[in-house]
Image (cartoon, rainbow, N blue to C red; front, side, top):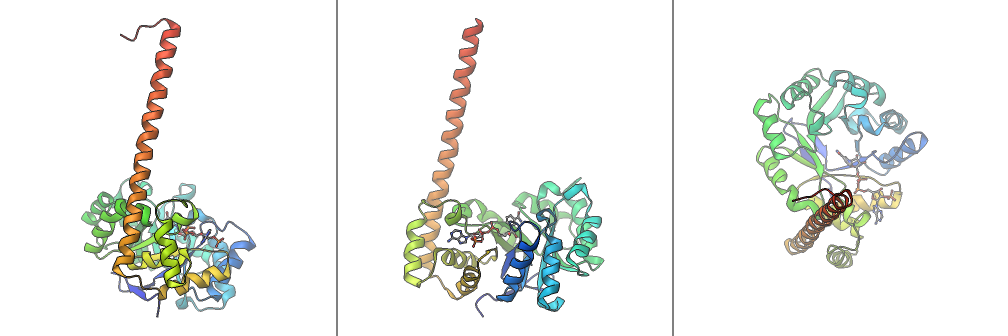
Length: 303
Ligand SMILES: NC(=O)c1ccc[n+]([C@@H]2O[C@H](COP(=O)([O-])OP(=O)(O)OC[C@H]3O[C@@H](n4cnc5c(N)ncnc54)[C@H](OP(=O)(O)O)[C@@H]3O)[C@@H](O)[C@H]2O)c1
């Protein structure tokens, strides 16, 4: 079985690749795309209150004819319309047309109001009420997780974070902290190095490994993400790509392959960091020149 399910600390199992609805929009489009994913073997759907297509996801689940226990459904508390957690989860399950979700996440630590412990207590109540089998977090850093765990009765089952080779070094402490605490990492936007940041240091090893495995570069990125122990949350509008993502579960990268991707990712991360610093220096210099120029023009002495 290429994409094995992973056991969560709640005792439930999560399929290790999921189909996300973030960019699908509304109307018939997302219904068709979720149906296409389900028809092609995906049994894990990742949506959120803020994606505004929980209703469409629910229609697709119903039209698929699959039974409730055949599909792992995640949604997230996104603070949409300033609704609280108890109202939001009830609205979400109603929109999805199901009586519970498999996983309910706090979409971001900035939504944990008035503070993380209070927010998490409400999430624990969601689980106690049977509206979610497992509860978790998304985009939480190490400090956020420490605050949460210090007061939690129930540990988060997952932390869904941005993860690809260009952010791996920066995200590594989160992965390590999660592993120590039995929290599964879910990786989103794993394909950014080819979809948004082509032309960087990763191109070479990705192309070489794609040739070595007779695979596509997106398959290599998914295999890398899997090798890091994360559950992958991805998406595609195309049937062939969806099938390719599933087939990527059969690719086993060697430790040398992984090291080559890590090294190129770290180099890209360093370059991006230098670019940010350079940009700040240039913006600072322009601002200073403008202030000096204005003072000079107005006859104000800066000394
Ligand atoms: N928790 C959070 O804050 C958060 C944030 C972001 C995302 N997510 C979740 O993660 C899911 C996936 O996010 P994502 O869309 O950023 O993921 P992704 O897996 O990085 O990207 C998927 C996109 O890549 C495109 N793609 C794949 N291979 C390609 C190639 N070779 N060339 C060009 N494009 C290619 C696909 O387009 P085609 O349709 O053309 O195949 C698809 O739109 C979301 O739907 C959501 O569920 C969560």
